[in-house]
Amino acid sequence: MFRVIAAALATITISCCPGSPFAAPTNAVSGEQTLTPADLVPSPVFKLGMPIEELETLLERDFKDWERSETTRSLNNRKDPKLPAYAKAPYLQRIHITRLDQQQGFRRTYSLTLNSPLSGSRLYSVVYNVEALRPFNDLGSLSAVAQYLSAMWGSAHSGSHKGEFARLSYLFDRQGELVRDGDASCAPLYPALVRLDEKTPDEVERVIAMIDATNCGGNKSVHFRLQADGDTIVETTFFNTILAVNPRDVLKRVRYGQP
Image (cartoon, rainbow, N blue to C red; front, top):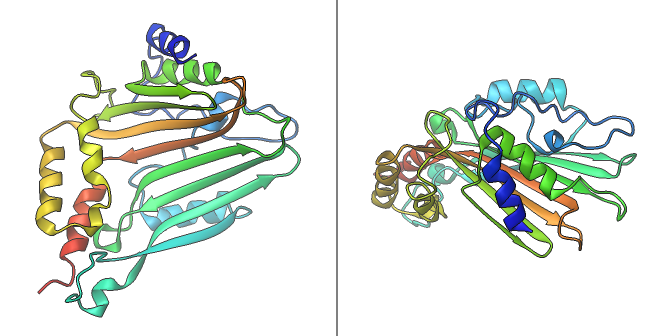
């Protein structure tokens, strides 16, 4: 099945600017309207880099009927007993908003991740999850969504399709263009970002140097959960992240409170 999807991705050309792929989707779901591939893409109102003040205004205006929860994290998250208490103070790291549409049987959730106040508390990652809650509901077909994404961005850099799970990933440079060397320059960077805020300043500096040596700007990927037929979608999780922003904030954080 994935070979079919990959072939479709390879034959459809980019039809809009990859640097601004969210111009069309609205996520507007009302009445008995069927979800389209555009409804599975994050709303364009969540702009990466927007400050928390702008984000809070947006949430209050357009998402006030969504259920909200928050996640905090220590400014300096390193396990160093010598750090002063103020260095471990929590900051607002992530805002979760959820809306359950009982009529249609869908649940939609945004997870909006901010860098720390040391860097202005700006949005650098958006994760958008859509889930069908009833057995007879679905979110469309994997092949249709793959073609929709290909029309915006071209061929996926990587992907997989095994049984009831599938994934498509796209890498972009700092100009917002699709990376043209496959994933050779950018993919090796991502393992170095795991649990980065638990590492030493020297280790974080090395990761930043690795990123600066490339033109990698960010990634967009979609994870699918499917019905037994391997094509009908019951859940999607869409990730949109700026690569270079968070490591520089992490460097400030792992230095915070050090003598």
